[in-house]
Length: 88
Image: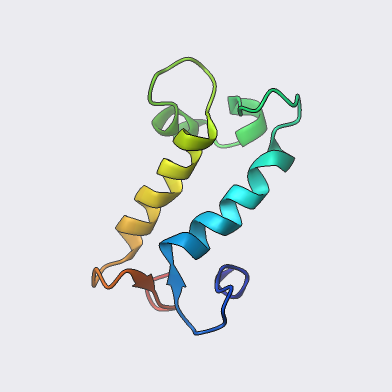
């Protein structure tokens, strides 16, 4: 997964690289084509609950990106703005 996220192959993954990968997957997850994800489309109920900040049962692209941005912050232990294989 690290190699897929490291778009420029510099052995680091920036927030934008991580978000780029997951944002690219978003449309494929949206099976009903409504531009949002439901819990079934997302496939991880606990993570979906955290992602769906307005509790409407749908996750917008903004909510989806925030989930992965927050994940990046949690993984970036040295707060360098880039993830290394050790941090992943």
